[in-house]
Length: 321
Ligand code: SF4
Ligand code: SF4
View 1 (cartoon, rainbow, N blue to C red):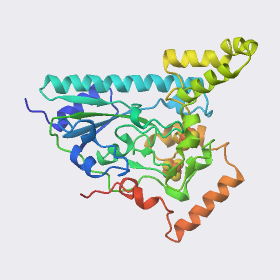
View 2: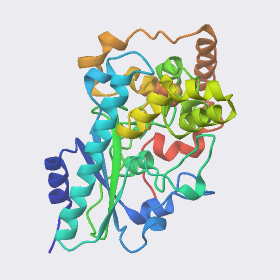
View 3: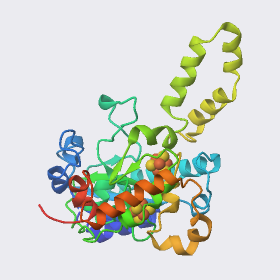
View 4: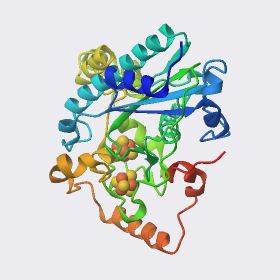
């Protein structure tokens, strides 16, 4: 059975995807974001990664209007969006396989356990943000998050690899990020984890994954080291409750801080739904402002910092073999 890119995209949208784009697997294989640790479709399945279908589900607008970085409503709703996205991936795989094309999901929060890093650098087998650029969905921002014309960075990403050869989309060809002259993500980041075209994952991870594996291990370790009386108190503590609820429902495990996402002015949704709630950034400090001003001055003299060149392909949405 023949399947066209248009038919696959229509199916993905009918299943609930807000954005969908297609990249060629071999192009991603040739352009790993970090060649020293390649995250490429061919390393997941060399047989069935001819096309990479990248899917995006938008975050809920009401959630992006909230200003806290450790908000349980945000964590819960974002977890539901993650589940929804995973189900869209699964149903799209069945659709492709029913048409005769073996396929596989690349879930949003999947990471390769062989590369577990207790400091938070838990990279997946495929960088979905980079794949999304190749599939024409957007370009990378100052902290290397994906920005889209429709929703800015307010999307979650997933992907399906398939044996089906589909016409690919082209990268956008224009950077969406306003760069050092904007820097609102940097000013809003409570962990001060954002540099010039760089994210300090060790700083970001405890806030982005506030009730994940590290939180649970820290709590268990405190219990193991405590006296008998303290152990019982810790067992029945708020921390135990948060761990239990997070394991039960996934709340806050992969769905923590979104401050950089909430305040980014890129995306058609910003003016309509977010500007009135997010224009003021409470996390601004004189130190962050001074650092950003220094970056902006460097940028004016043509210096984009030591990390730009490495990511230029995806920041600019440029094409090329
Ligand atoms: S998710 Fe939060 S902690 Fe991580 S970079 Fe964005 S604002 Fe900073
Ligand atoms: S907030 Fe500004 S600097 Fe940060 S990603 Fe968005 S456009 Fe780029």
